[in-house]
Length: 591
Ligand code: GCB
Image 1 (cartoon, rainbow, N blue to C red):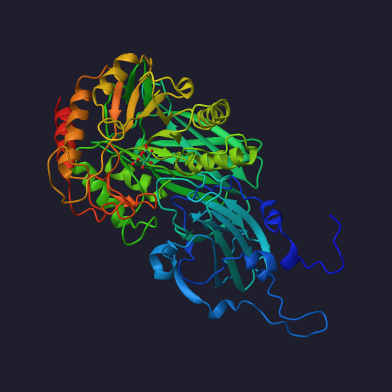
Image 2: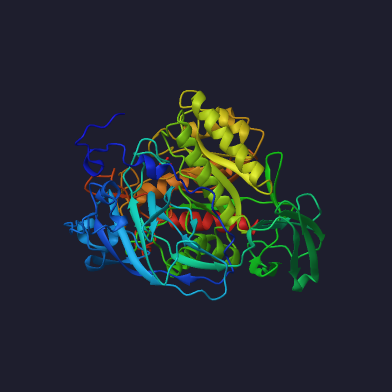
């Protein structure tokens, strides 16, 4: 559109975001587990930027003078801004920010000297939701999605003294994944670590390794993608298995199948091997478990043996740190899940930190990982699809080598419309093509009128997840058995959610809503139904491990928390239903 003589971009340009979104950072993953990295965590300067003035007025250009040498008044002064810890969720750091949604501009300086590396990347572990990144006055790119890592090459812009600026915006939007309406709290901030990677000219961008399905546990497939070189030879070694192999690279890619019979990884014996992969001057050492996960008819098989998934759903949250959970908090969750006799956790509803899968590999826990295609996504919008698919790819790239992860879930409780079917079946197919070694699932809704599994997406997944709230949102409990009898899924089904709210410590009769006794009663009925369920029932994962923050839950007992936890928000109090699940799972485990 033609601009008039008094048009001023900084205040008149309505679509100011467009140019930042024109340079999206997508699928930028670098295999980095087991690499040396330097941390940019710590205290960063920040400003609350409710009106997105950083992006509108281009603060990152740091222009203090006009062309006549006259000084401008500035709206910013990076080094004197207040400071906040990175990583963290801003909501937990300052009272003023407890409910804040919008943009916060983060910045810090860092020094850089070349130590012989050819290329330098910055990794941002996760920042919710839109991150516009600037280094030394240049826009490096914009990332969408609140929970997956992204990498930016900064080789050509680095100097001795550097400034990085990240404008993080967690505004809920109709077009985002998830959209503006969710049943959890919308934390904001750079909530996972920021790190620097120094790499040679040619480096291993992607390294994937897994036991080959159907090989009788005797073959390992490995694949590498090299950035910066088309040909050469990558070297793979697994000393404990006597493996020393060469992978020829052509067109930047190579793959190999090796004969090896590793001790299999499972929940009781989570055996991990040191795996080394090298290409020219680059090398990575990762701890890897080898296991096979398959479906046979209505059964899920782990290493060829039928397994029942004794699960629990969990959000990623702690009272103190919000979504930015610490390693100690993750370990506490796993310890409590094991105490409940779980072998499986559904990491709902978005990708949790990569540490979750790394620790699960180590301690032996099976995982379901999920992207936030939750409720009413804008299924007709190609940009929304691209965003969802990118989050899926970034997640798979990040956790492909984690033995603990057995299921990729492409979403939760979406209405069975045509546009949703196109959108989500395409995601399921993408997941399958990117990673044929795992199972694909989604948490679906049953048909509310016929009490039957009818969701058309079920045809596109390996394992069907069904969320049902008999005894709670649907008080007529008898219908659960009807649902089981009516359905003929011909594949494994997991009850991916069931549950009831209870205020920690609140007691009463089993008919009183929000008491632990009512929650226990619902769980007891559910457990009885599971015991009588058809053989296709291959696992259950109650909603949810602990009470979590939720702006939609405003009654006096809820206090902005979803109270369906089996634990209190601080994870210190175990509700009665915890023990019911512990007993049910304990009995199943001993069968
Ligand atoms: C569901 C959703 C979950 C909610 C839960 C509830 O079906 O998948 O995100 O938190 O119900 O408590 O209503």
